[in-house]
Amino acid sequence: MSDTGLYGSIYEQLRFTANHIDRALVNLRNPTTADHARNELADLLGTIVDKESTNPSVRFLAVIFKQEYPGLAVIASLANTLRQRAPNKSELQQLEELALSIDKESASTLAHIKGRR
Image (cartoon, rainbow, N blue to C red; front, side):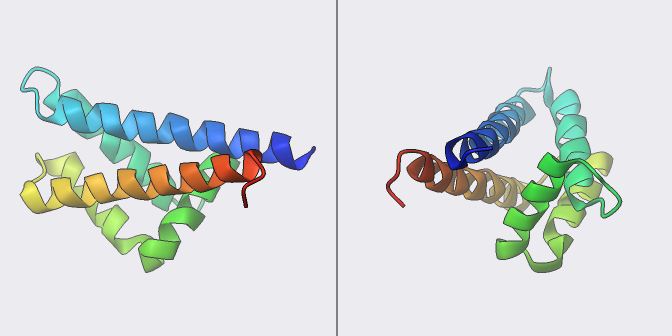
């Protein structure tokens, strides 16, 4: 696979996950969709911290998050919280920071594709 193909695949996965998280964050603020969004985010974060996962996309996201969240404890905690209740203001901020870290990685990957890195 060429570098462009590799980075393209990575970029696609990052954008998919970032959009997924962004959509869930918006839906968390809507009483009608909040419970579904909470469960959806909990499942996504739970798969990222699952050390038994063999999904390469999930493993890649875990590597990205480990750069900013060593051991992924924050992500595991957020997943557990979301399974039990709605996030508080601080937890929402942490979720938004996760989305931002994916956006940054997406921008970096896109720069690789365009030959700027």
